[in-house]
Figure 1 (cartoon, chains in turn red, blue):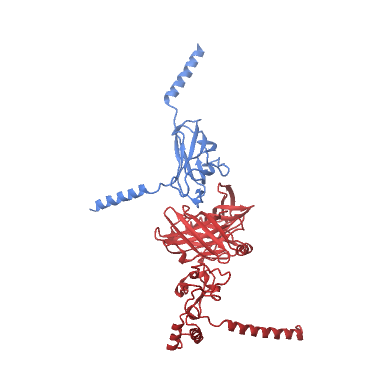
Figure 2: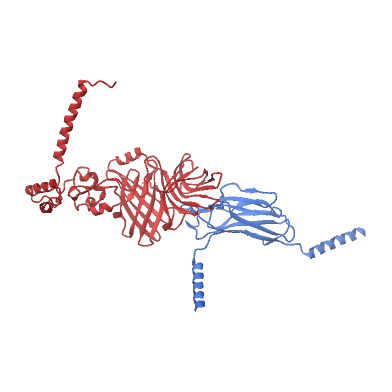
Length: 387
Length: 189
């Protein structure tokens, strides 16, 4: 019934098994516990006081290290840097983005990563505190709102009760948003709430002086549901590439409605992400534009792709300003609480890169509590600033 | 003491209200408070939204519906006042029993100024009052937005207008009668 097993196959399998055994032994030999950067004297003392306090292998490694080199177990003065290590820059050792895969190859120079900080850092899906107290964090970003997948519709929205689209920050919520390329529908997906699928819309476009067009699209489902989308849009041919601003959906009979602001488009493709990542030294993309809820706020964001993808941003309003930065992964980015300016008491910034290379935009949401004026929730579409 | 407290509280509320941002409004401004049969009546459509969100003077879009009694007026035209311009056709409808309506879709209006002017022919008889009402074409979401720098909704108050039809004075009737009588006498001679 099955294929006959011949001698050649048996020999190949045996060879593979032997190679696997050899590889495992080699890995075990290489994987001898690295205790550089650890306080071996304390570890050995702790082990001797209570053998359960420290793994025996660690204590043995420390004992050997102390015997071999009296200075071992303390931070090396000149730690070895791997070629191409993005964490080689001074100060980068304290960055959470330099732990992950690099810690297995070379411990970050400088301070030992703070386990407590890593544990509470919302940018990490999981922390895997390895032996010796060295915390190896995964490189996955923790996104407050579901992230965007390359090449797929992507966007964010604010949501308030009623038709006004703009309300108090305290009662404003966030959701994912998508706008149909032909402007005939939109979708708002709020976590834990039914997805809002707009009624069929009849779009019309008017020119603007800023390169966008104004889309006015209203419609009903033939019954009581009414929807509207009044947005700045950029089109490629007849297809909407980016859309921003007013959405609403409600029932005229009950007068119940939800509305808000949005920033949406199509996430950058995987091919373009690969190009950005592999373009050598790194590609930095600059974006700028007004926010949608409070358009007196102007935002600037820089995304740096390459070996060590990072982003920074600033928001300027007549009443306040703040800065943020953090990790960038695929199309998505999210703030690192350690990189907020001092006037930010808490919150997050999350966004995604949209559009094709050379004509890109950023959709993002902001939820920060500032010393003054307090809580801010906003959404913005920022266009790429061409160098 | 209570009365004093109420007075102070009332004054404080009044002060707060007077210092609050001025509400946006859309109003009809007739060219005359009184007209006669056969006159041409011009009615300006005015926007007053100096404190609206967004840039000033901005670029406001919206759709309004003006309603009137077709027994009293005949719609002639609507002319946009620059920079305001049409964002769709001017739609006149309902020239039968009941009220007639004119829908005007506009774009790029300044936050304070005239969007355009309706022109009517007066058909009414003495003593009539011409009522002109104005409202947002979208009675659920509202249609007004400022589009600069981003699109921000605006919910203005709407104010219509009333125009009196002035009866021809009795002296005019007497004078015309006298003229007719004089003409008759002259012809008989």
